[in-house]
Amino acid sequence: MAGKVKIPKGDKITIDHGKLRVPDNPVIAFIEGDGTGPDIWQASVRVLDAAVEQAYRGKKKIAWAETYAGDKAQAVYGKDCPPNLLPDETLDVIREYLIAIKGPLTTPIGEGFRSLNVTLRQVLDLYVC
Image 1 (cartoon, helix red, strand yellow):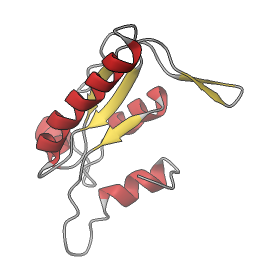
Image 2 (image 1 turned 180 degrees about the vertical axis):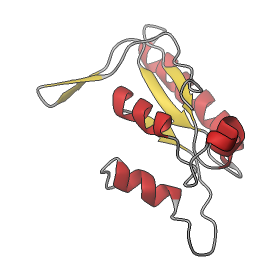
Image 3 (image 1 turned 120 degrees about the vertical axis):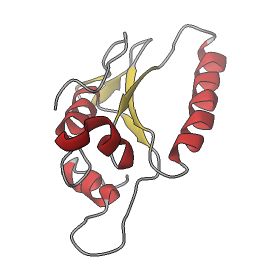
Image 4 (image 1 turned 45 degrees about the vertical axis):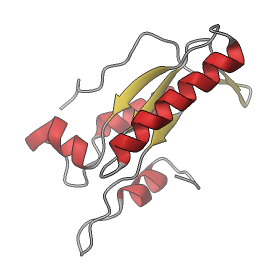
């Protein structure tokens, strides 16, 4: 199942004595999301990139690493996608690169399927997701 996420050229954000150290070309993971997620992401990434360009006058640039969850994970991983639609590879990349942005994710109605938002929050020990 490994190997679906392509990490772009860039550097890791690190933590040094409790403080984030952000390089000039940080790799930041993103989950495009389901439903309106792709449309929201296309607009968001343009705004985020423009803001970084404006603020740092080209001296900094985000290297975006797409990770997968929800419907897109099912499409990308196929039969290797776990039933919760959250591949371990996605979690590993988020843990390794520390920062991720996600779009809206599927929350099916019915029993037997936990919200991906809740799963991400609990697995990554987050208060906000």
